Length: 403
Image (cartoon, rainbow, N blue to C red; front, top):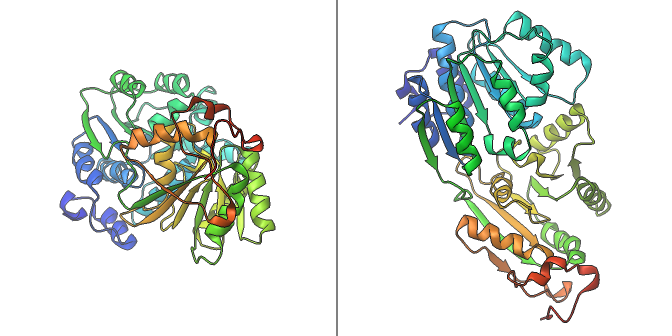
């Protein structure tokens, strides 16, 4: 099957051809016909499967064929990074078409807010927005959604995890009742199904690879103490020719510390976190995307908001607190049917968290032995509740044997 089989508008097909897109992914094969037939849809597909194009292509086709120039589609996303990523995809897909779009997100200056305001007033075909920034415009009274045909919630599970449920409900109150509503999510917890029942009318459902990392990801883990993390990281990176490496840490403070340490060790590294303004964050991402930056260190803000192919290695410097976040972290590699490696560092305190991850993905992740020069490692005993209060600074020999 190819994209030509969908009978998409010629200018849209030309854009796809110029990007080298020929064969649709499974989520695209299933979702595009449903959306073209104006049916509501709830789709569950892991990151990296092509779900952005799965909803953008049919929506753009419908806008071109039925008229444009007023607000037709609203896409709500959890983070500014994802808003920018989707806006860039729209610009690429619509290069040979008259479609207009704008990304609306916080963290930028007043000039951009005024530009967003002008777009709302003058009319734009597609709006990609974060909830808070969109509400800032909605409450001022000049945003009119009377012509809206499509509401799309992307990364819906992430938005609810981030506490946007009330904001989403407020936004919905401004929208017309008669619309085509599409919900895309990487996971399908009960709260998502509750929201779907409220917003969607007789929806079609698609489930692809629910809660599983991409098949091309080779997963492995090291059980270690905190003070062994930097030496192991140095061992893993030394002498390796990996163009792009993405390292996730649990907090902004840890990300900053890890960035300083990597630079001290003379790695070409930079960090992205909430203390950077949007211009700085975009610049870091641009360097990483262009392979001018080898190592990017980030919190989970990037786990669903970065769309860069060929990331060869993802390192979970800390085990994510939410087992679902592991799926999204390791999903940054092995995108678009490529292959990649995801390695997790597990200290004694995080062993119970990693056990939950293994239960979620339905597989045990291989535990690799530490290099002998790094010293003994702790036992891996995730069922031991004592691990939860264990810190590497004071290794409790009564609870853990060295081997």
